[in-house]
Length: 343
Image (cartoon, rainbow, N blue to C red; front, side, top):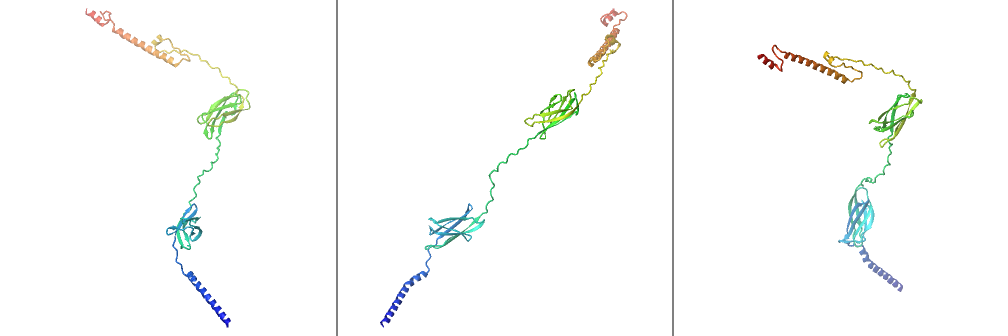
């Protein structure tokens, strides 16, 4: 009987202990399930801009105007997480990420809250412009190597005339000198012939033409001769030289010319009038006399004859005027004779 009482007392003690323990744990469980009052609401800001090929996201977290340091901030672009950062002692944060494609994008910053602060979100938009076209290169290209143009050559074109030429004759050399299509004007050329060692100096005219004659010896002719034309060149045109050949024939036989005839001069007498012939000696025209002397003699004869004829006429008139009438005396005038007659 005492054993049953012991067991009953033990069971009751266990039940009381369990009930006590249950009653002690009940308030704690109730407090955990009850909603707690929210903490202060923080203020989160966010800004974004493109810099140097990067998207820079920055902002701040404050509560009641005071910075919230060491707060974890999550960042997202168009809803896609791009990274996390934390606020500094002044409550600001900053991070950078890859620049998205050109266009307008939404940038979001989130603070999930902690034991004393609630969560906060902030969203802004940013427009990414298309990259500008690449600027033209300001680096000057390497200089091209200078192109070397060949200097124009001087060209001598000439001909020999006659060809073939007889020994002892005259060989004519004519031609033109050009350089690059332009005439080589007012320039000296040396023209030399190996037959007899003849040489001459020729000068080109404004058109670049020249002409010169070479006198050949009459004997010792070769089958052919060579004429060399040389231009020494100057500051405008380069030098040039050509050689031409011509056949040589024997000298032509000399022909004797008839002696010059000597014509005898025949005297020629020109009579103008009987009076002129009497006063002037006959004029003899000799071959070789000049025309002015002959003309002067003819004119002098005509003038002299005319003068003598005029003097004769005057003498006759004067004699008839002074013929004495009967009873007149010869005096100095007609008045003297009239005085005598009146007496």
